Length: 133
Length: 133
DNA sequence: CTCGTGATCGAGAACACTTCTCAAGAAACG
DNA sequence: CGTTTCTTGAGAAGTGTTCTCGATCACGAG
Image 1 (cartoon, rainbow over the protein chains, first blue to last red):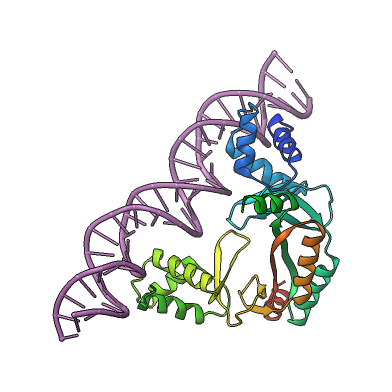
Image 2 (spheres, rainbow over the protein chains, first blue to last red):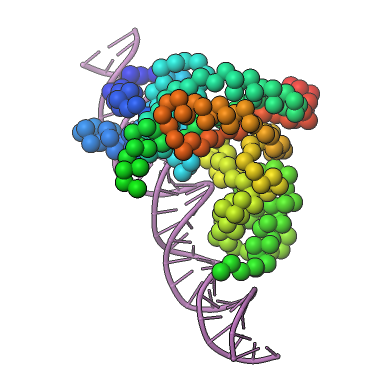
């Protein structure tokens, strides 16, 4: 049985408020900042639940943190992420899907899953970086 | 100034002895098993050095560990990894390179780096899995 | 060969992130 | 309203990685 608690709603809401990927810790801080006395453990639990149910995507940042994001599209897709501000764009990658499957098949691999994410600097951050450089 | 110490050689050697990706901890254990009194911190340092110099590739396992591998090809390339036995195949991905750059450019992103790795079951492990299923 | 310098080593402490523990709290349901 | 039992939350525990710092050893100079 799954219960509906305000804590879970709060986590989902905080995720929705955010355009890009956020770390569990950041989410926890943000919630605290708004006055929620929610616990860190609960945030982790809620995020894990959302990820399992497919209501959120998760990925590991290059620094090793787990990042989460509320993703609308239910299907399989990938992300283009600004490493500076966290802005995230969902991208389709049919070509890459096929490529991954082909490569796997050519080498006798089955059950191919793939990790495909692109990190870069978004236009705004590129401009900022250029200005400060 | 960089010195040549037997410890560094040992790490590089242990990496060479391994076909697939290994975690720093596993490498440390392996070295200890052969009698090397090398320290864990040193293994981490050596691996980081190798990765920086391009003599080793590093990636994060889905579990969050940092894995390392001695990669012959100096250029940029990706991996097809058996999630069961760790067997790793280096793959070229010109198409994906171009795709990543295009997608990034289309969205105004610069300095695009990408994470592209394919996990699957190699032929041998697929057969084994089928046999045991 | 011997010496001096300073990069490197290693054991453990320190850290960051995540998961677990368990008593207290509160949904859901009759 | 009361009972049941899932959920919460504070902190402990666990895991993987990095840092600290005195001791050590490689390397070039003499």
